[in-house]
Amino acid sequence: KAGVTQTPRYLIKTRGQQVTLSCSPISGHRSVSWYQQTPGQGLQFLFEYFSETQRNKGNFPGRFSGRQFSNSRSEMNVSTLELGDSALYLCASSFDGRAGYNEQFFGPGTRLTVL
Amino acid sequence: AQSVTQLGSHVSVSEGALVLLRCNYSSSVPPYLFWYVQYPNQGLQLLLKYTTGATLVKGINGFEAEFKKSETSFHLTKPSAHMSDAAEYFCAVSDSSGYALNFGKGTSLLVTP
Image (tube, rainbow over all chains, first blue to last red; front, side, top):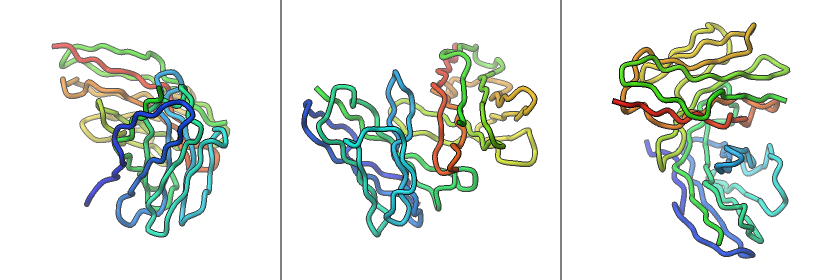
């Protein structure tokens, strides 16, 4: 079956702009998590959605937001972009989000560059 | 809080040599531990995980890891390195909610001929 897909794969924005990234989970998966990966901070958890509800949130400013649709697809939005937001944004899907019970499958990521 | 520390940001081994990537964890509850691999321009792929039960966990591609509670460690090993093993490896622990992963900084594995 198809894996986790993320669009777009690459994105270039300028400071102050906003951006929306999309993630389509594996069919049947209801949990979608987002992570930010940077050389300095490594992989950091942004938030997790299950059945259209944000269930868990990492330590990121309110400029980072997300949502999940009834078909489990998820979007994340970053407003008022800063240079430090340049990163690889990874989406992961799993059946119910419980890390110890169900494998999280990661997408290839969206590479965001902020100029 | 649950966290992991990976010792060594870069590890270099010769093809055919033992691979040993180190990970120590800190957790206030029995941890769920994971090893992921990331190839260039790709997402993360699960190598193996420890939840409960047998402390020696076998994963894909010949990798295995041993959960040692007394040493708070979960080191990843492979008896014989292949060139295709060159990648970034991440150790992770589930956070207190159970729904998110806290990752280590990663170890870049270089395999030389």
